[in-house]
Image (tube, each protein chain N blue to C red):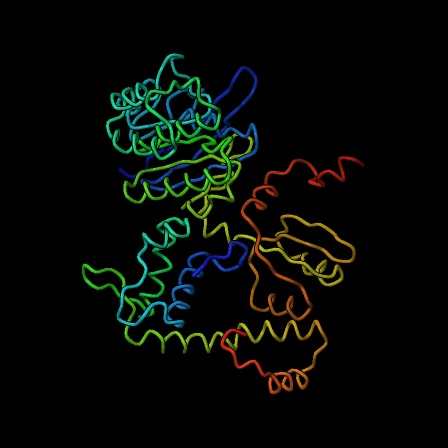
Amino acid sequence: MRIEQDSIKPIYVQIAEGIEDDILKGVLEEDEQAYSQYQISKQFNVNPATAAKGINVLVAEGILYKKRGLGMHVAQNARVKIEGKRKKNFFSGMLKELMSEARKLNINKEELKKMIDDFKGGDENE
Amino acid sequence: MSDVIYCEGLKKTYKNVEALKDLSLSIGENKMIGLIGRNGAGKTTFLKTCAGYIRPTSGEISVLGGKPFDNLDVLSNIIFIDEEIQYNTSMRLGEIFRLGAIYYKNWDDAFAKKLLRYFSLDVKQKYKKLSRGMKTQFNMIVGLSSRAPLTLMDEPTLGLDVAVRKEFYQIILKDYMENPRTFILSSHLMSELENMLEEMILIHEGKVVFQKSIEELQSYAVLLNGKQEVLKPFLENKKVLNTETFGNSIIAGIVNDLSEKDTLFLENNNVDISKVKIEDIYIWLTKNGKGGGFDEFEG
C-alpha cells in the first residue's frame, strides 16, 4: 500500500484502494486483522480523520468490519466484492484511459483489438 | 466547549500598518490546522493574538472560552512556539523544563526528557549555546511536552534538515493521536505536512481567504493542458485561477466543477487533466497584480 502525492485521487480514496489492493494480493487475508486508523495514519503521515474516512468507505461496502475489541477485520467475501467493483470500474475508467491514449497515438479500434489479442504478457502486473 | 478559537472582525493596527483587518473565523476542538499566507500576511500577528501576546485594536476574540490577553487562566492552556523565544541567557534546558512544568497544567516531563534524548540533547546544556537547528528542535520539544490544549507553532521547522523535519512530523502526529488537542501550524513548507492536517486556513492581507478541509482543497482545482484552439473557448465558462501559455498549448488551473460531459469533451480533445497542489492554489489566490511573474517583471 502506498500513497501518491500527485494523484488526482483524494488521499482517503487512495487509502481505501490501497487496502483493497492488499486484500486482492493476499497481503491481507479474509477474516484476519486489517490496518487500524492509527497504523495508517502513522505509516503515511496522514491525519487520523483521513485514515478513518478511507477505512469507513470499506466498512460501508462490507469489505471491512469491526470485530469487537479486536479492531478492523477483512470480511469473508471481501475479495469477490472488490473484484466485482473493480470490474465495473475497469470499463468506465481504465478502458477510457486506454482509448484516450490510443486516440493520441492514432491507433484505431481494430488495431487496438489486435494488440489485445496478440498481447502475450499473461503476467498479473502488466 | 464548541470552538477553541472564535474571532469576529478582529483588527490589529501597528502605527499605520494594518496587520489584521476584519479577520473572522472559528476553529473546532482537537483539530490539526495549517495556517498559510505570504510573508507579512498577518499569520504571526494572528497567532500572537490568540496566544495573548498582542492586544487586538478592535474586534472580538475568544480562545478556550476567554479573552486571551493578560488572562492567566487561558494562557496556561496555550503554548506559542516560534524562533524568537528568549530565555534567560544562563538557563539550562532542564531548568526550562522545570518552568514548563510550573506553567503548563498538562506538562509531561517524562515525554520531554524522552524527546530530548531522542534528539541527542542534554538537560545540562545551555539554551543560548545551542545551534539554530538545535534551538528549533528544543522549542518543538517544549511545545509538544506542554500538551497545551491549544498548541500554536509558527514556522516550527525553520532551519531543520529534511530528515529531522520528517521525524518531527511523525512525532507530532503520533502525539496528537495519543493526546488529541488543537494544533495550529504555520509553515512555508506546507506541502510536506498537508496530509497531516484536517483543515487549512489561508490568510492574505490580514483577512481569511479560505478555511477548508484538506480533502476539499486537494480536489478544489484541476490543471488542464491542451491546445489553445480547444481550451480557449472551453475556459470562457469556467472559473479560471491561472493560465500559462506554452507554445500552442494552454496550461490552465480552474476551479474543479467539471461535469462528466466536460471531462469527456476534454479527453476526446487530448486535454490532460491533472492534480493541482494546494500550494499552487494558494499562490494563484494571493498573487499580486497581473500575476505574470518574472517574465512580466522583466518586460
